[in-house]
Image 1 (cartoon, one colour):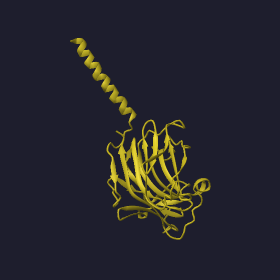
Image 2: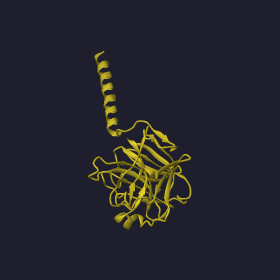
Image 3: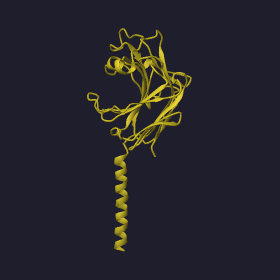
Image 4: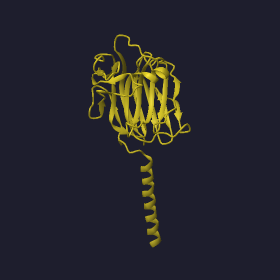
Length: 255
């Protein structure tokens, strides 16, 4: 009897230790998924960036008025309205939309139509940075540059280290219509998809994969300084607003 009881106790302890080890592997984050149809602003789940700007590589300041909702679609509008006085020294204003909560392993996806024009970047990404004064960000990126909207650029950062960029030929012009873009993130891989088709996989062989849950974000911006010179090209404002469009954003947690 004592041997049987000891065996049961060992079994319970083993199961508990397995549970602890799984908790250590899975990032602490929101446990449930969502589908956001973008019919209107949803402040209970998302925030609209307003009244601030990123670093010198960004040629835009974020303004809430540059996030628009019409007919079940969210548009991020880039323009120069008021930027002679209230765009924090940036030449343009644009929009950014992000979750209030951080999300961990799972599938992030959006249906979007990107902005065309040299210098522009339309994005879907996760972002974690514990200390904005020190760039130690974890990030997983989907980006389409306006200078060639037939190409998709994917990348990831771990503790501020990137350099894992891969460019993928889409086979279509992403500025002409809506398409579905997604990535699946796990402890052992990141897989990127376009319209449900796998287009790229990273398994950590080029550098450790990110582990920290991040905010799910979308934005439209114009490059400046080093980004403009080496990556995006120079944006010339066409005289009227430029928009990137999002039909929905979705997160499915890993099982």
